Structures are given as structure tokens and as C-alpha cells.
Length: 456
Ligand code: ADP
Image (tube, rainbow, N blue to C red; front, side, top):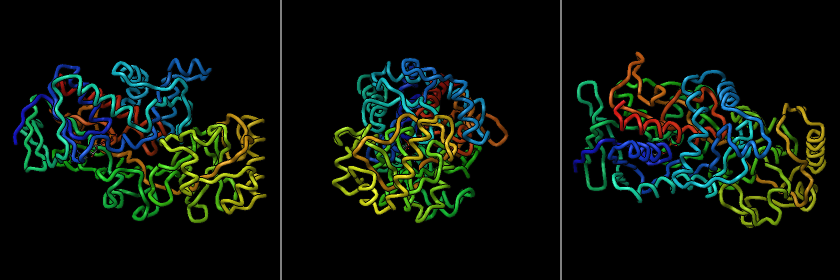
């Protein structure tokens, strides 16, 4: 089958759908192809945290913040390896993009929070579970407006080039070859390569072998767009920077079952019941520390502030009581009882919580360097959930400029080719802050759609 349209988008996660909607808003007719039988990618599996500074929600909560602080934390949190021009676009446009999503009908909760490795309370929480709010919002727009066609089960295999310009995509659908011609441009939004053990092994230099580490990713996150772009000369940046979380489900590696609701409210203890790290630190720092504990295993411990009855949901749409019934979380009416339940030394656990509570009272920085505190862990019952390291995000990928145009090795624009989302590299440096991915994919997805529609 052959199609001709203005903009072809490859990938139906958050970045691709943002690009499709934005291209359409900028006057283009769009076809989006998605290799899986459904939209959503990794985006739909995400906890939902969307960092945006300078939000009226923060003002209402008395939280001081600014796009400049968000910029600095993003840059420093990635060891100053990120591209400052791209970071600035991200942090300046994050809140306007929340407003754009709201203009499309998306709902966010009133309170912002600090997500794991987010370093600051600027995460906006969608009212719908996980990443569904983003995907549903874009789908609603697509349903309500003519001019965006979605082809599922359609896997892009190569870019079509005419002279030096990318003019289309060759794909495979269920019924055979699909050739898509793009009058204006092609947007690559195929996500990262966290689910490709081969690519992880090929590029990983920062971690011990990742071959046997599980992932939070959906199975389609195999770096296809990176390979396709490379063939037409795209430059790749930061491919060695692979993000792990200390938050994997012990059986599947997924984020499901994670009982934490916000960084301030929980601690981590190892199999002895001892704390071992600043639980408000960077994701790489926490994961490295976890890997040094017995069996690379820890317990997330919190009290019932976030779960007054146990029927409240975690960030992954599961109630505490469900998790307990499934044996994926544990409960004790006292800390000693909880320690008994999870098989850690009760004295150590009690001491860990006591020390933490003292630090909450004292404020400032505790013995592990932790500075993010809210309230003491003291409200019975107490809960614990087991967690292990898991591959989560790939910071490296296709190099783009601030208009989401793809660059070659000499820094020249590859005409007709745009990229956005996890498939791109160079924004987050060596470590991406929690809550910055959903902001990144929406901000740059939106820009890529506009650039492609207007043939920038
Ligand atoms: P991002 O957060 O950057 O949007 P996601 O992982 O959410 O990344 O989405 C990427 C989407 O791209 C996934 O739904 C994935 O299945 C899809 N995808 C990956 N490779 C291809 C391909 N070769 N052709 C079409 N779709 C693809």
C-alpha cells in the first residue's frame, strides 16, 4: 500500500502523538505508524510525573522554583554533559506545555510532588493513572479532528531519501509493505532501547554487565529509530548513558507494585534493615548504592500517611491492600511487626526510622546527605515493598537542534528529518532527572510536529 501525506510520524508513544497533534494544529495532514498493536509505548507505563517549574500549583503550595532552577538541576543532575540549548528549551517550555495539554483537555491534580530522582517538588500528577492521561488526551484530539491517520501493527524499517532530503518511510504492515511519502517531513519518535539487551550490551560502559538486568520497558523499545536514522547519517550522542532505577518489581523489573508516592515520605532499607543512601539522590547514585547491598535488594518503607485505609492507590493504579493480598507489599501495626513480616532485624529497622525522624525534625542534611523531608514516619500501620535494580531509560540517541531537526556528524541539518522523545540524545547528559522524560517528550514532540508541518 502507498500513502502520501504531509507529515509521517514513526512511533505512537507520548512524543509521536504530541508531534502528530502539533503538526495537525500547524496545518499538516499526518499519518502516524506504530509497530505494536496499540498506542502508548513506554509513555503509558510511566508513573506520570511531569516536571514543570513556575507552575501556579507550586506557588499555591509555597514551593519556590523557577525554570532556571529546573535548568540547573537538570544540567548538574546529568554531570553537565547535556546540551544547554536543548535543556533550556525543555525547562522554559515545560509549564507552557502543561497548559497546552490542558488546552487539549488533559487534567492534572492540584498538588505537585517530588518523584524518585526528581530532586525537587515540581512533578505534575495526571488525574488519570500512569501515562494514560497523555495518550488518551492525544487520542481524543485525533478522534475529534480529521486529518490524522493512525496505522497500528506497522513497523518502520527504513527512511526514504531523495537527494539529501528524507521524503518518506518504508514500513511493514500485517498485509505487507507500506510506503509512506511525506511532503513536508518525517518525525522519528520510536523511543529508547532499554528493551534491547543487545544494544544495552553494545553501548553500556558505565554499569556492570546489564545482560541479566530486567527492564521497566515495553518490548517494543528496541532502538529501531536510532538504527534507521544512523543509516541516513544522523549523529548519535551519549549512547553509553543508560538509566537504571532502584525500583524494579523483583519478578518482572516493572515499576508496578512500587508503593512510594513521593520521595519525602519513604526510606529504603537493605536486608539487614539499615538505610544505605540518600533516598532523594539522583537515580544513578541510588541504583549504584543498591547494587552494593546484599542481593542488590531493598525494601521501601513508609507509614500510612499516603494510605490511610489501604484502599488508596499507588502511582501505578494498584491499592496497597491489593499488593498485600498478592504478597507484593507487607504490613505491620508496629515497626517491629513489619520487620518480622519482611525478615529484617527489628532493632535495625526501628533505629533507621528513629534516625530518619530525628533528621526530619532537625531539617537540613542528614547523615546520608538527604535534604528532602516532609513528615516523620510514625503513623501506624507501616508498609514495606521489595525492589531491585531495573533498566529504565536510555539517555543517548539521535542528535537534534532546538527545532527538533536531526543533525549529522558535521552538525548539519538532515532536511526533512525530525526526532523527539527518548529516541533523541544529549538532553539529559549522564543521568535524567525523574519527571523530566514526560516533559521532554511533550515539549520536543510538540516542537518536532510544528517544525515538520512548517518544513522548517
Ligand atoms: P517516547 O516516550 O519517546 O514517546 P515511547 O516508548 O513512549 O517513547 O514510544 C515509542 C513508540 O514507538 C512505541 O509505541 C514503539 O512501539 C514505537 N516504535 C518503536 N519502533 C518502531 C518502528 N520501527 N515502527 C513503528 N513504531 C515503532
